[in-house]
Image 1: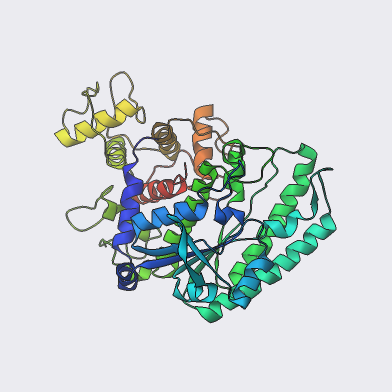
Image 2: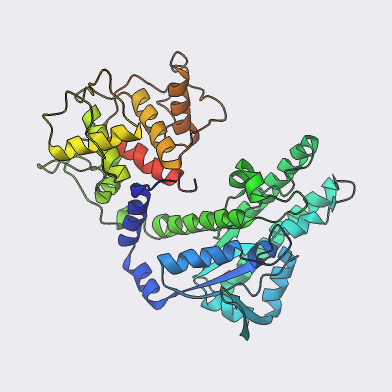
Length: 450
């Protein structure tokens, strides 16, 4: 993956605008407690104990925040939700286990919960696995779904216990993935149904208990051979644990941003003509990142159509790269040297192309053209083409070439652009400055895990 300046900038902006209460907590230090099963403990696909998602999350929290303490000592291979619940009820004492390994000091679980600002839980798989016969490769579906229902009740009880001990703790619960992706295709329907049922129960329990659910199934399924490389072992690889840690980390970012602050509490950059505009927050956000800017009169002109020269400048700001040679275009000499440099840099990436050595910088950019350039941005940054699952169901893109249809589908599948309603994408419509702010910002967040 090549450097993607916008992602770093956006998260830097998020940290800069967090409220004073969060900043104060960072100064005091954040205590992180991981509860759960072998996934929190760190059992690898080889069966050996190693770094878990909780460890990688702790590493990231240490970099992003002031991590005061971390303990996964209450996580244990084979643990069910009932085991986690009983540990809390019985206030068990266990040795601290952090990134430095097993410590000589022990601590009681209720004390650990009381002192924690962030708690993660991964439990539930073992509640269900007892209904799976490894020899016959068959599920006792009745037993499995009964286990799912009991798991939900246990989660509700766990969250009530935690809320009683520490109502201020932020609790994140891991959703589960299909642990048997290598089994026969005929079994996958049952497995998918079971995983969906498990995650629905966990989601409901999380919602009722004011906790946050962390989706993992779809992300792991996309590349299960990397994340679950051993067909004989249901545990994740190191790459899989890193992925799950990233998913938790992003939910933490979103919590700090959406749940504790919201747009209304953040002092965004403001413009004279964006108050009440549908893209007001996107515009302020991307302006704070330095990717786009307003005009000298204090306006942003959100509904003004973008020209090709504008898109080249924006893409240059997004990538933060320099050109190695001048662009071959005959119609850009009248622009400032800085603008010409950005045009040249973007041209070298292949994101923007000309025709017969002409860029046509003053030409308006259509939504189809913007989709193409975003697709090329994806290809440049991640060094691979985006391959859609199937072409987006828009009625007005069927006569475009395959590259354009795939580009539009990328925006659709990444939930960046769902079209203009009535089953249409409106590919010939001109892209506005507001739309560009939204598309680029959402692109940065949507591709965070690539």
